[in-house]
Length: 367
Image: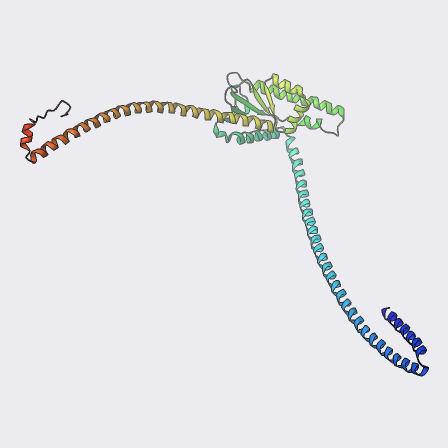
């Protein structure tokens, strides 16, 4: 486009020159000059076109190189970005696969746990098995609270004087005293009571049966394990399932009141652990107080001995002070006698006669 504009300007300039020359000179001279001018213009236009083509080709090649360089940079950045995104996507995908594997493993464990729960439920349908389960649970809690049964704080399967056998007997400090703990597991009617597949009338009926079961257990504990002169006037009923304990406390306050009247305390695993922890703390404090009393008595005895030691030390100190005084006096007399012997040695007999020296000693040895 620029080339055409320049050529148009040159042609316009030539036409103006021709008009000027025609006016000033003859036609022959004008034609010659026009020929020369045409030749010059054609040459200059050719040179201009050649130079312009070279410059244009150089600029175009430089532009192509810059565009290729920019495209290569863009291509490298795109490739790097794609690689990073692919790596991130791959990591995310691997994390998803790993979590899916963990979910599968957890699902397998849940399935296994479901089968174990079903198995446990089938085991707990038997009353004897439920009793064993409660006894083992109770012993485990006691062991955690007080250590092995050899500690002497509690006993297992203790036979009472009336022939009844308590699951455990706890030797608590006064004023609690000896407390019997017995495990009870009223499960059958409870399961029927909370079964949503049954009608409301059926569930109400089983609820009444459940209340009667709990009252029967309370009466058994109160009559068998509260013995005047042998145990304290209260006992503990241990429910090995938290669900049973929560059901009674939430929906059956009449059972709590009934147990309170019978002096039977209803506990679940959590509340029993808390109760035993408090008793354990009391025992430790009593043991600490006992040793503190012994230490106090020994300190009193040590104080008496120290007073005797002080009296004897004061007596010895006075004796030593008296001996030191006697030694000082004896030292003075010794010095004077030494000086007298020295004077005799130096033959100062006349001076001794004139002084009419007499040496006398008193009862304590003083001159």
